[in-house]
Image 1 (spheres, rainbow, N blue to C red):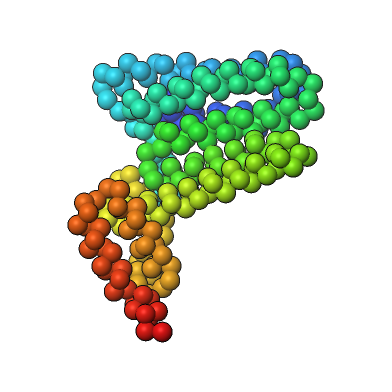
Image 2 (cartoon, one colour):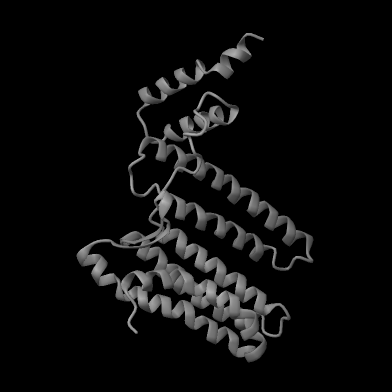
Length: 254
């Protein structure tokens, strides 16, 4: 049965996760051949992505998606354009080489199967990240990347240095994730009808900004994020609005 283009692109992202599930069992059954067999997954993804080079360069971007939560208009949507295709090809190519190298380097290691699983999961998260076509999907795969990198860095968890490096990596990526969440939420405020927003991550209809500390913090973070994309006059106007915020006025009277 021939897969549709939408299903094929979704399989590009799902295949590494499926391979990660069976990697430990496959390693126990096949031993030193496990690296070669698992490397077929990223190699196959690379080969498929190569077939998209011509249609992308001649016909433009390719979109694919599936309804996820229709009641809220949320879909798992992906985009293959020139830039995302370049990154996806890079991830698949390097992933193939790393899996092959790990198969030889960790040969005989009792936790080699676990390493293969984490490596493939990380690759799947990276593919989802670069191919995401909505802010919600982007944020989900960002967090999956953070978790997978944390587990990979802390693979040798008996060493204190590995545990410390893993925690440091998790802290840094989660700080980035919080700013990504704040920026995506503010973008959804400014562009509620944009199809890439999916849905606001913080439901601003439930609590209006200015009525809670959370709303005030969202305004502060969003203002400084806007400083990079708006004219200086717009930023000054927003800072003046923050200066008149009830929380600021209340603290000034103390």
